[in-house]
Length: 430
Ligand code: PMP
Image (tube, rainbow, N blue to C red):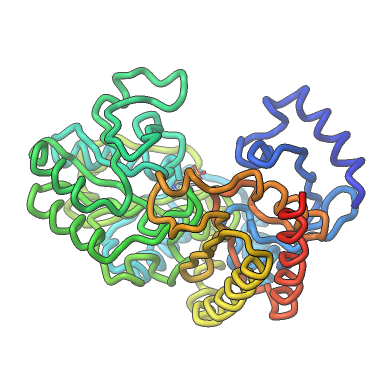
């Protein structure tokens, strides 16, 4: 596979942009090497600047559940563009997208649009603290909620980590009220609530984790979360930036029959444009300015281009209801990958929820960050490069979710399984 043009562009970009990228995940740091530069996307495929055609399982890290350049989405953007890009004044489209979100996600009674998932979680945390008048927040190790100061905390082990920022530049004071617990550990959660319940403003979690690879919550964990938050007057926040409109139209909360107090959204609701949102109980949402005292704002929030893209994406999902078919295809792919890894005698587990999945090079079921950190990342890197050489574009880290879109055909899935068989075998021999 030719990479010359990408290589030259990466050299140039590295002079101009830190690491050559505007977001670190895309720099291929986890697999050691240079990323292809993408020229265009179409359906399930990406085309890079060297002319390579790549079957895409990243989907811009989640938004492209309809594939690249879905006709309804492109048409909506073009029609909107003809009227202007941003007004900083109310538009009908903002209410249309809000209606679609509220209609899809029963726990959301009111919703506020922002420009990214990070903004959504940052604002939801501020709101939870402002509404409850409490400072402490609980998150879980291995869950990523964007680069919010108070949320960039993770435990390196099962131990409870108290307020240690995981990036320089975050004052210790910003994370002093962040408790990072082990995902799926109901007992630890109960202990922390027993000791500090009256000080806890909220618990935030990915209701299906994508950011340590795909990790599903246990039913007991979810139920305990809801119960403890209710008992102690803390708000339960589902970060559905990745899972919203992905694992079901109404997100993980529809799939698991849960009702969080607040929900954060991103990725699919923008259909590829920069959109985030947070919403939930009307009594809580009314605390946001201008109806309430908790300040939050945005010059480009709810801008017409982003709204149009989101509206077209959600309407198409609502009308076509592709979720059963996405799940069928994902199950086939996951079974094929598992068989291929089994044949090569490689320790593996391939969890999936809806159309999110991860091939973990790990013999144990991955239930939390401690187990996930034992994945064989070197084997993953060899597998990753084997797949890219064969024309399959996977997330460039073992700790990410792969996404299947409506554009992936059964033939694409078969080709992926065949390539994975070769790549896994080659990764063993290396
Ligand atoms: N929450 C979750 C669950 C995410 O997966 C991400 C991004 N991958 C974010 C928040 C942050 O979103 P953004 O990158 O749009 O700021």
